[in-house]
Each structure stands twice: as structure tokens, then as C-alpha cells.
Length: 462
Ligand SMILES: Cc1cc2nc3c(=O)[nH]c(=O)nc-3n(C[C@H](O)[C@H](O)[C@H](O)COP(=O)(O)OP(=O)(O)OC[C@H]3O[C@@H](n4cnc5c(N)ncnc54)[C@H](O)[C@@H]3O)c2cc1C
Image (cartoon, rainbow, N blue to C red; front, side, top):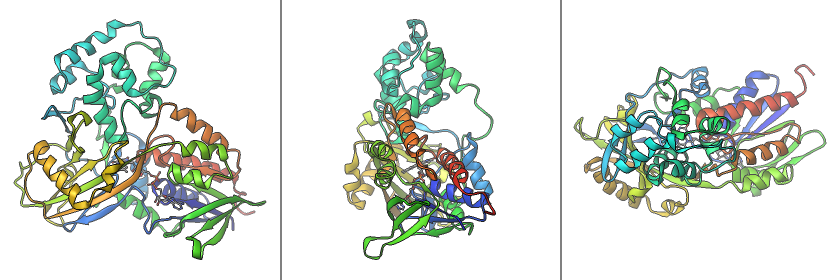
């Protein structure tokens, strides 16, 4: 029986293992996960008796892969209860302007109505279309640099940085336009012209239906469900230390050093974060390994608080609040989990919210004690959301190296990685380090890796 080894049990590895096992029931698929649990950045815990996600909590519903995976796994898909969110700027909460492209304004009236920007910043956005000519933007550039040049630094600091920070935990002035906002980059590369008009074309007419989705009990259930399908074998607590080529396939050194073992496989999917993939691919794909080793990451912490007996208006309405770095606070965003998703907190009769701390370059956040992080969040929560009540329970989740940073030139780097990996028959990579950090993008990358592995396996019945 041919064997495929999938290294890493995050959403990418689980999706690849599941897709390979579905396509080829005659193939033994073994998923090797270093940690004691599967899911990677998908994780849920109980806080005050109520289940809540402490990693990814919402998947984009405007791309098909996440919702399709949940439905195929037999899970109900739920929409958020509210679509409105706030932006905390100059000490005040404003409605998040509608129709931006990850913070890049496309609709001047909407940005003006939100009250986030000064009159001078608004005037500069308004003047931008007539300020050209703007040649096509063919070279990659940071989102912050482009937006700063066209609309001024205030738009970068107060709109683009917090929205991009919400997705990548990164800084607008470092993240690649081509990798982080590909639709806008493509438009500007072909047509050039005004950024305001390009953003308006990309924002288009909003598609009907909710932008985000989750599943009851937490998005992490998607990982649990995939791992529990029985279609493939899951070995947790089994780190892969080395990957070697043999005349007929691959050999993996698995398990920790004292009781390490070897596992042979006909094909291998490497679905671990960039730094770990760099170690595993050192011999097999040295160019890819070097490129993977230079992808930086941002670390963050998610602090979840549970409150009992809160009056219904204790928190501002909406799904949460984004906080720009220029506000000088530690908290970069708060999700009002019980207001955002149906049923969150219901089991414990509590109101749950989660605060996110840590942007690229702020790894020191992870060194603080849990109690200190909870205290910081409580203090800032009072200023940001006016909530001073005492929580009945809390949970701190640290995500060291949680999100890869797509620096300027990332797409070209990924092309070099994939070209090197593709020189090795039967080897594939997938996950958040390549073409999108969101759950649907990770699943899509797993499906591409699956196609590669399936093409390398001997046909069924041989
Ligand atoms: C705090 C946070 C919030 C987020 N929120 C959202 C959100 O709301 N929506 C969204 O779409 N995305 C969100 N993301 C991004 C998204 O969750 C991740 O990009 C995605 O889950 C990554 O999946 P992955 O499979 O590529 O990697 P991971 O989830 O990192 O999985 C990799 C796995 O490989 C294992 N591993 C590592 N080395 C080895 C080894 N040598 N041998 C065996 N196993 C190994 C790890 O233990 C891990 O389980 C968030 C990310 C973070 C950190």
C-alpha cells in the first residue's frame, strides 16, 4: 500500500491529509503532528465553562474553501450576529468605514462619515485622482509606502495599519502590496491610475451574504472534525526531525530524540510554519529552505475574559474594536465574542470577549506573566470600551511566531520556493507561509499540494 506522510496538523496539513485520503482510499495517509493536539492556530478552550476560540475565530465566507470544508465535515456554518465594527482613534470609537480594501479608502463619503480622519487627510484623498499621472505599479512595494505617497501618512496610521494588523499582525509599511492586497496590486499593475479609483473598482458592489463564517462551538471544531474522520491516521506528539530522499521515496526521522523512529513514505506534504519547513527541507530543497528561513513572523497573545451578569449595553454595539498602533496601547483589537457569534458564552451564562496583543516586532508581549497581560487588557478595556467590571474567568493564549509576515517581494520568494520544491518528485508544501494566511487560503494551498502528491503516486490498483 503506498504511504503519504503529512507533516503538521494545522488546517493545511489536515486538509491535505483529508483530500488525499478521500481521493485515494487505497493509500495509507499518516499525519504527523509535533504537538499534543491537532489544529495548530485553530484552538478552542473553555473559559468559565463556555467554549471559545483562542486562535482563528472567523473564516472568510466570500471564498469557498473554508465554508465548503466545514460543510463537507458535517458542521453547521454560522454567520456573525453583527457586521458592524469600531475603530478606536484619538481616544474615541468610530464606525469602521465601509468599503475599504483592507483599510485603503475606496469611498470618500464613507470614510468622511466614520469621522476617523482629519479634514486635511480627507482633502488629500479627494485630490488624489486628479493628482496624476500615475503610471502602473509593476514593482512590489509596501502597502504603507504606496498609500502614504498617495493619501498621506495619517491614512496609513489610522486606517490601513490597524486593518492589515488585524489580519497579519503586521505593519503596513512592511507588508507587501502584491502579497497582502493582491487584487489591488493586480489592478494597479495593469491599469495604473488613481489609488482611490482602483480601490473602488476592487471593492466593487459588495456580494450578498455575510463576509465571515464560523461553526457553533468554535472554528477549531473544523480541525477536530477533520482529525476525527478516521479517513487517515493521526499521530500527535510526533515531531518530524528530518526528511531524507531514498531511492524509492522518502524517509522521515520522527519522534523525540531518545525514542526516535524512522518512517518511510512514497510522498510527503510539509505543512509546518516557514521556520520549521526550512529545517526539514535543508537537504532536499536547499534553495527553498534558505528562502523559508528568511520569512519573518509576528508573535501575539490572545487574552480571553469572561464576565457574568453584564447588562446588555455594557459593551459598545458591534463585533469589536480595532486599535491603531499610533494610539500607543498594547491592545490592538478586541472581539466581543458573545456579541459577534450566536451562542458564545451561553453554556456558562457569561459574556466573553477576547483582546489581541502583539504586532510584528513586539515579541516581548509573550514574555509577560498571564496575570500581567490580563491586568493590561483590563486597564485598556476601560479606556477603549468603558468596561470596568471584574471578569469571572480568563485565559491567556500565546502564539509565538503566530503569523508569517509577507514582506515586499514575498510572491517572488514563494515562486522560488515552489520551483525548488517541485524539483523533488512526490514532495509538496502548503500552509500559511505561502499564498495567504487565512483559513480558506491555507485550505486552497493544501489542495494544490494534494494535486501534486496525487500526480506523483502510482495509479490505484498497481
Ligand atoms: C491569533 C491568531 C488569530 C487568527 N485569526 C484568524 C481568523 O480569524 N481567520 C483566519 O482565517 N485566519 C486567522 N489566523 C490565521 C490562521 O489561523 C493561520 O494562518 C492558519 O491556521 C495556519 O494554518 P497552517 O496549517 O498553515 O499552520 P499551523 O496552524 O501553524 O499548523 C502547523 C502545525 O505543524 C506542527 N508542527 C510544526 N513543526 C512540526 C514538526 N517538525 N513535525 C510535526 N509537526 C510540526 C505545529 O505544531 C502545528 O500544529 C489567525 C492566526 C493567529 C495566530
